Length: 381
Image (cartoon, rainbow, N blue to C red; front, side, top):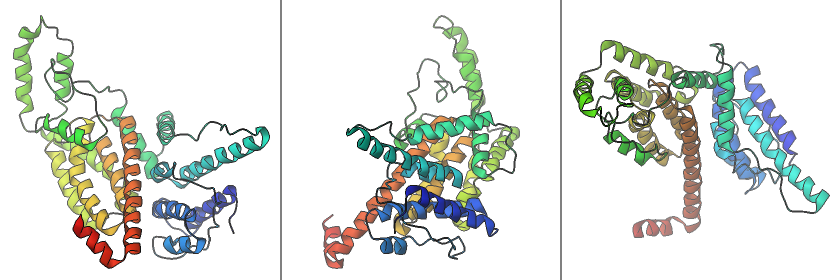
């Protein structure tokens, strides 16, 4: 029997609490259960409760069943608009808060219709983008967060430390002052194009060139050119040991805070990724702008993980790869952009949700058509 939205949320709270009381790692269990719960709620709206429970069995990471048995959510408990936001939640409390805020506006709209007989709705639920921005503002206000806090809060603090107090110059991707840089785009293709315009070794030395060149006028250009050429020559040299050490340190600090995400990626695959990441850090490849770091890290991690997900349908692993990709791109560089990082992460998680639904539709269609018709359709394509 379906319960109210508040009852369903209380059962979720009890489920998360059970993992903590049994001595399990609450954060790891939450990361594991998050995707199952989201799929369970979505399935309840389009199939029977028995089928939903069979499709989305709630189990802890060791395969054991929890004592808490989830009640069914209300029939109108729709989370499709909040799906990307729920997948981006970093802990149980944030997840439950999103669920709670989702259920409030609908009940308010229903009461409004009864009271006034009008179809006008009150303010819509808060968008995923503004929710993430508020979380970051709270992190800025609490920079003294202790080191034993959960990994999500720690990664936000590190992201802010990399970005605070440093404004990204508009010409960071090019050492020439007369060639303006185009606005950073959110699509992967633009990141690849931006990378092509950067030198093979783009270290933080380029900030010195930008600082020196940004106020040069046309009259001063001829006088400034010899100095500019000298500074550019220095960029062609290999990174100094100090620069390589700083880059590897930033990478290691980023890796240390993505334990829950790494737990969803097989150890053998992660070892290969880590070796490539360390080599890139030593070579100075991460001392570049955020878009370029994202592109380089994506070639190492995301392309492989996406191919695996297409075959295994392990979408939680792909979401973990997206979060890993974003955190590494933010923390590994000399400066970051937390707003772009979080907006892009939400967009990427939304893409994963779309892929998951698309493949589910494809599988259902193939099941309806039968093996012979499905084979014929694939041959035609």
